[in-house]
Image (cartoon, rainbow, N blue to C red; front, top):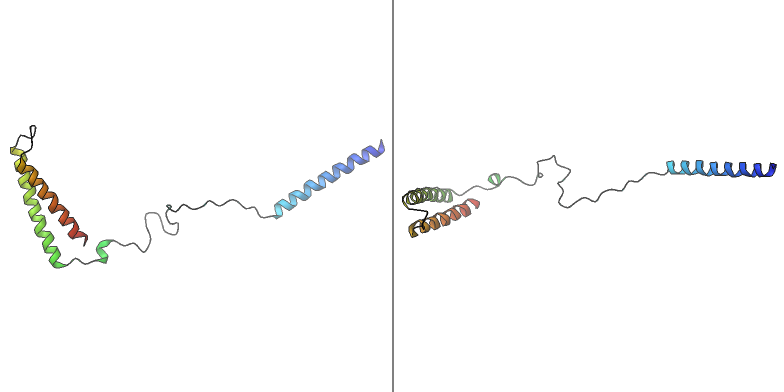
Length: 124
């Protein structure tokens, strides 16, 4: 019986040594956690939230509007205001439940064209 006890203790001591060595080796190795792949649509982490970065500036700082273009925009806006007032008067007089008069439709088309022109002029 003595040799079997000795053998059992030897096996237990060897197992304890293996476990102790494994835990020492594992603690000595640096633990690497997987890093997530950044999304191409994610905001840039180098800038505070709400800011898109130093390269993007507002359009008013970069461009000066030509005085001639400014005057053209002003006159077009005045004309747009007049056309819109006329449209409001025509719509008030007409019975809109039946059909729209052709003059109201043409006036609305002129307003739309003029608004697009002003938009393009203001873009530069």
